[in-house]
Length: 465
Ligand SMILES: Cc1cc2nc3c(=O)[nH]c(=O)nc-3n(C[C@H](O)[C@H](O)[C@H](O)COP(=O)(O)OP(=O)(O)OC[C@H]3O[C@@H](n4cnc5c(N)ncnc54)[C@H](O)[C@@H]3O)c2cc1C
Image (spheres, rainbow, N blue to C red):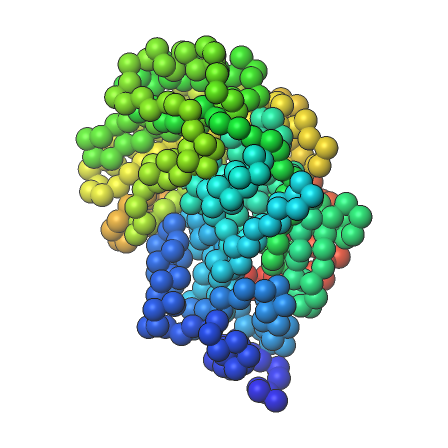
């Protein structure tokens, strides 16, 4: 025997030793190069600043299974990381075992399907599929991880045509709480299959996703930068674009302020090389820099990586959902602008508000997710503050909540709070009750009872079911 059962929370050392005995090269301790490197590969310092007693970097589902079996012998905590892009402190731990799936970045293409490991990055996945002239529904910034994006839902440039990324998963290979490795698809474990489509990380560890593929050729798009003073015109153009109802086209509009800098950034995408006049309202607004051209899809995603702010920052994000109304889009901007102006004196801080458009066409998919979107246009607002000074943590979190509350009040005042308004977990702060807002929530609770009756996955941080 390697250790005495049961392992208690204090016995994390025993667990680390047991894994080290089994997988010497894959278990890493503090102050070793692989350990420190792993912790640097996060989006937010909320995860980077943790010090897990040890990090396990498996390459096979069987190894993940072995780790889960060992953990389940006691009450040690666990954290799961794929690409590490969550803004919440969900993807690491100070007390427990960190299972970092970055080396499970396998990709295979067979019979028109892509078999993708959770540890891959979207630009890498899409680049490898390019040689087959096919693609998958994935992230819009190349460096984002596969695992977390797919488990939260996944909004893609291709979503208006093919649905959320999670709605394009055909099979999940999952390690359950008892360490068993199962498949979840329409025929095997169909309840689990449903729950993993947007239900998050509280059902198991996904070790491989089988994804639908779609033909892709060259695409058109890129980035346009504007001065933030064009906010009114940009939001009007956003509305005009929405009414064009062209599922091959997609945009993401972000306003961002740092010190004296006040800019708007528009991500543009068209599945094809000739968008005609689809983006003309945006092109006609005076820009600081316009970089729209024809690309390989993976190159466009990699180019978008340059927009991501450097690591080493604290982050808070919040999400708000509403039905688009020209007035509310503008009011929302004004609330954000006025409230953030009050804080602009804080050094090394960036404020952002992103307008994500979910056209009704996203719901035209056969594979329903927990989000179960209706056939109406929605706006997902993503508010984000990023800062360097850790003493500002509380004020930043408080400020963003103030902005979000004011927008919710405006929604109510303008009678825009009715109907189904699902929150998006991947853009949400940890105190937002996201899963409860989803149409599939009651179903998800039953799936949780079925597949995690002893609440094993409560040991990992994430949105609770
Ligand atoms: C710069 C940037 C761009 C983004 N762009 C998009 C976008 O275009 N579309 C979009 O929809 N979202 C986008 N997001 C949000 C993104 O979907 C989430 O941050 C997502 O969590 C990232 O996935 P990850 O694998 O990198 O995350 P991680 O931080 O590794 O994981 C996130 C959560 O999922 C859990 N998890 C991860 N892998 C597994 C697994 N295999 N099994 C079980 N649980 C797991 C983790 O425990 C954690 O709770 C973006 C975020 C950033 C920072």
